[in-house]
Image 1 (cartoon, protein in one colour):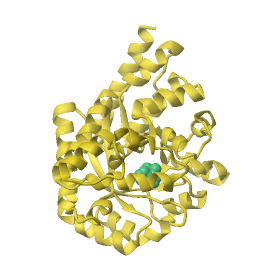
Image 2 (tube, rainbow, N blue to C red):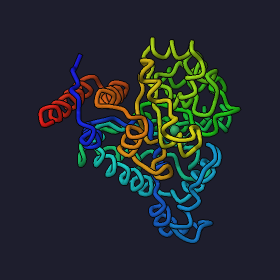
Image 3 (cartoon, rainbow, N blue to C red):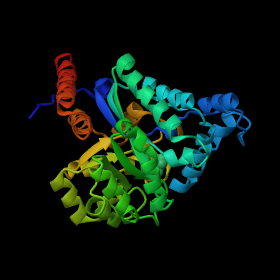
Length: 349
Ligand code: ADE
Ligand code: ZN
């Protein structure tokens, strides 16, 4: 067990920024900044129902998940060509590099684009090319996870998976996102079974707004390897026990939860309680362009609001690396870098 030395309160933000970390819950369409939305709208001749960047940004006041999703899908409507997907992902990777992200697993929503007539190949190839450049130019290891929109039917999800098969080597897993309540995981039993048969990793949003029952069925029916969000587990003691025993990773997104009114304030967030209960929690940004911050901002604000310490910082960063779908040799290397980073802070403290 690696010994984490105490770090002074004043140096904790510096440590949070500097530590190598993995981001496991980022919707790449949720990284589209208003400036890029307007630039792409102009490039592609798409009309937006907002006068300018400031007007669009001022619309970012959400009351729940659905009120956000309506804007998020409207923002994505400017993405038409392969280069647009590349530019969007590249802008994210530049920010991620700055946040010392060493590994990023990007969610993308192909149905949002194919429904508008954008070819599947343009979506996947543009994102894939950005992932390759992230490795060679920024040293970030990156992979793609194809998400099904849960407000649509399972047949549509199955058709989407088949449509993506020519690019099977360009994504490592499937996920489940969009409107949660009323669309339980079991609605997608067959498509997740098919994905597992194909050797894909499987994850699902569950327990963001939806009940603990959705987390149970994501585990038991979809057989997911990680739960995205999962914060509603706190209301079910047996589920908490199981998540801790199985060390099931949870990709928690504090600023998202705040902006979508899952918690009244960050000080009310249950991330600290879940860590204390021994759950394998990670911190992520979800849709950073909409929720007021990229990965380091999530760490900084959460640590300030919940008074977390260096030990918990180490645990969260280690969890993110260990829960990633990178190979074991890479994980070992990043864990070594993480330990070195913490040792550096202990010695200079
Ligand atoms: N799609 C993008 N962000 C999402 C979120 N936080 N929950 C569900 N679907 C999403
Ligand atoms: Zn999400």
